[in-house]
Length: 387
Image (cartoon, rainbow, N blue to C red):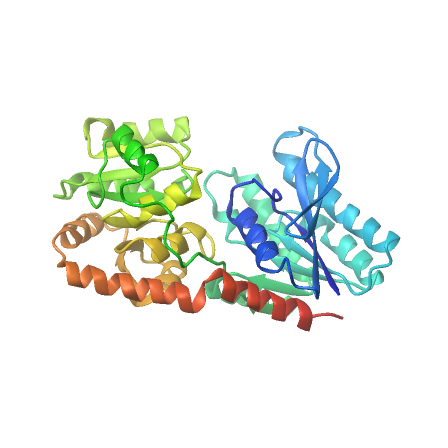
């Protein structure tokens, strides 16, 4: 049996986020696989173990020390892994670290894990050091941390071909070993019917109706280009609504209002968050179109979900997004007027053209991003890369 220790997600079950969904799906699809045993770090206020999807979930108690919590959590989780491996005499373990937060400690832990007969894999995520939310010293730390994680990892598992290329070109001196395995998405439809009371109540509460709104779902941060999307929507000729599903940040919201005065336009609607996954899937399916403005990071979960659900997808034209959408989506730039004209074009598209794009997008997800396919790829990796 191959033991895999996963560090860096908030844990399973019940936490929401890209890494959390990934770990949930990985353990779900492999729960009956007798060759794999998962040990998953979970961030908590108390320490205990539990089983979920046949994985051992070990809870790490994290003190309330502000932004340094994430670094403390990963370091404490790795210490637990090493102790557990030693105590239980586990042979040839794989430690899989999600995100590049603990570079300064990486050399120490890699040496320790090697002494225990194990290997260290790292998922570098996206360009954390480019995110506008971090002040300059923190961005510098993320970049150095990524550099050190790359230096000491046995394998960098990249969820985007663009990220893999970046790692290889940026750290050529370390000659990092890399592989590409994407993030996954569901390929089924929502279990909710068009006349489901839950859906109709949500529409009634938000003043929306099926196929009469454009949608975005994502973190409310500047690098996801909400400013461009809202500005362009306001100057387009569309009569549809722009429904924004996000957890708002009051400071950023105030900045957008000052720049755009979007509150004066009833077409711009911040509709809160939706944690019910079947409802969210149905809302995506019923959108006329989906906007994706992310320009930092690798394969983005919300983009894959949109390509798998929504008929018409309008994506910011950057490498990460083209890699996912290929010819199953429309693309826009941040040039003034570009997205506005694309919205007008989308509004006028014949139904058969939209249907053709929808088929291509869903086939793309089925072929390259279904959770079954992704979990099969991880099984091959974990069973092949034992030392």
